[in-house]
Length: 108
Image 1 (tube, one colour):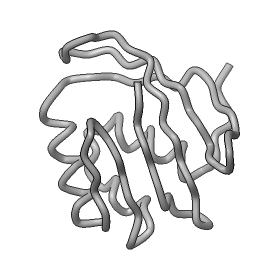
Image 2 (cartoon, rainbow, N blue to C red):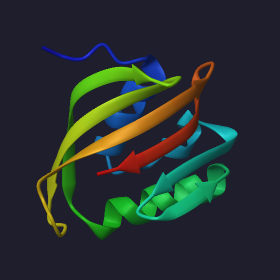
Image 3 (spheres, rainbow, N blue to C red):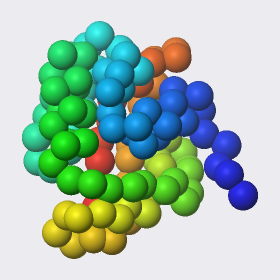
């Protein structure tokens, strides 16, 4: 059964499946992404992160659960690909500002 994700988050995973092109448009102008020990703030930095990440590895992510934790929407995804440690379940901590993502932290 598909998860009932908020539209900006569902759009994030749909766009990510297509290689990340255009993903920065889902984020607020001053949004921050934290992934693999790095922090990216602003849509230009987020665009660079998304394009670099999508070319670094071939992967698929399948959202398997969604819950609210301390004001964030936390989506757990089963991620498989050609990266060290595959497969892995990753947790995506989203904060929204209206119809835009204002914060995303990805953790194992």
